[in-house]
Length: 317
Image (cartoon, rainbow, N blue to C red; front, side):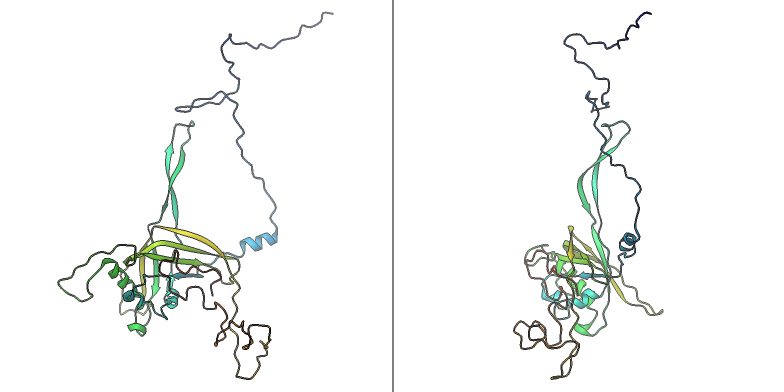
């Protein structure tokens, strides 16, 4: 029986001096032709279904963030004609609480399109981050008592009047103005903050710091003889950019319940080693029972030249 002849595969060899072209190469079009190398792996990590436990669903999905827990901190320039409407001992905490509506800012990335690197593919490569050009804040208007009343309106009117360098509030026919420089000792730009937290003060809170902000418009405020509603003032601020920080909440201690002099408090007995002992030199409670920073981080005016104003280091009371 004849022995079969083995079949040798045909493998043509190039002529001397001609490079060997591999059988599997990359392809390209336009400005990126194929480079004659084996394509690398795509690098995809394909996802597969996984089991979700009930405790994970409860901890992640059943505790959503709510929109009604936030605080806005307005930090106008340290000018007497503006700060006189920034009432409540010049701290502005009441005015900040009057802020009834705000919006967390957004941003986007500007891109350039590249159409010729891959067949049928349009790439978009970023080259700049674009911030929103303004933020709108709505305030409840306070009753006409302290400082002549209506401080939420008069403060922003004074701020815009100061920025434009208007000479007088009187209806003078010789009205004129000279716009101030935005920065410096007499500048009109400042920083404002919007802080988002939760009702139980658990976890971190977010704080948006708006850099070099100032009001550019006050929306018209309608009044009528129809059924009464809360009067609101909506102000639009422009800013350069915003900075986002995530900060841990510090436990907030409730004010100590006070009793008559000489009568011990059963819920808060005097301990010589604790801070509720009046004779303790390390006692940090005040005469009203508030301890430490109970009144929150915004109860002081901004220090001139401070980078971001009174950014808190602990929780918000």
